[in-house]
Length: 434
Image (cartoon, rainbow, N blue to C red; front, side):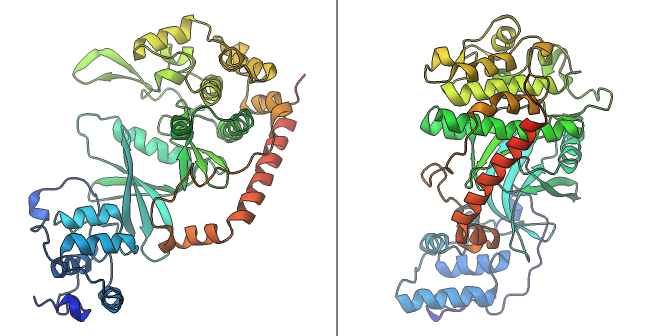
């Protein structure tokens, strides 16, 4: 194969076409990689072979570098330039420099851009639709023959997300499988979790914490109306968009309330059948959820109360100790009041949170709408997060959706805030306090 000189602004003239292949960007056998590229010519050829960039587009980019007198000669230098100019992402460049040029496309249409995170329910990637250029979050379920319930939980999440359509819940677009790999295509949230926000900046201003808790309650109210119980409400599952909208995500543990227990809420380790695993997060788990899988929406209200406590104080209601100790404390101890930890929290707000954290489900507000109604006196419009709180991370100028959002950012943010307040007023109005 003859590759033209980079200095001549041309790349891989005679390379045969390469078709997109199944994409699971996880460590692969060495046979799927070639030697790491050393020169800019090597990397240029690899980029074109990967189909991340077309040949003509790559030639045009190299011509611009040459015209500016900044043409790198080594692979690392060209990779840095490509990342800087939005030709490839940091994640793509890292793999290419390791000689990995295959598997950048999932189902032939979703281009993998960045690795967003990993967890017990799979690995999430930022992807871009090959033709629509819309960015989405794709959760890929890794094959795991040791856990027979994992696929069931993954499919249940897809079913749960498909049942809801609300501005305060992350939307799902598609679910599919390819070569035995299951994946879920979801809305990409250009923002940060409330967990990250508090970890980075400390407890939130009181008005923002109340507003965000109210938004989450609106999303949970819609989920409950569809017969869904989330069962894992926590700050890391509450995402904040640039516009100021809070979205509930990760319905991987959601239970469809109209169904009998599916056996997935209280599972046993395959190698230790006598050890029961409680699904959920110990810092935010309702007392009854540690004892039984047959919980209802009031467990979510407890968890949201614990999350609101965290937003206001910077720590969960029961801090310190291991998971078992925390579960026990949720069942036996009364947490401190939010206004005792942070005096500027209004006593009325601390009262609402204390009721949400009642040990007995009957002692809590019975619906998320009731929570919004009880918080209504303190619900105010708040400004959107600052650029420092949500910095640009992933070359937004190449994404059509993000381009559009940024070009009308002020208008979108203002209309979103107005819609947020209107939605919370409607939800609160449906549950008058009395």
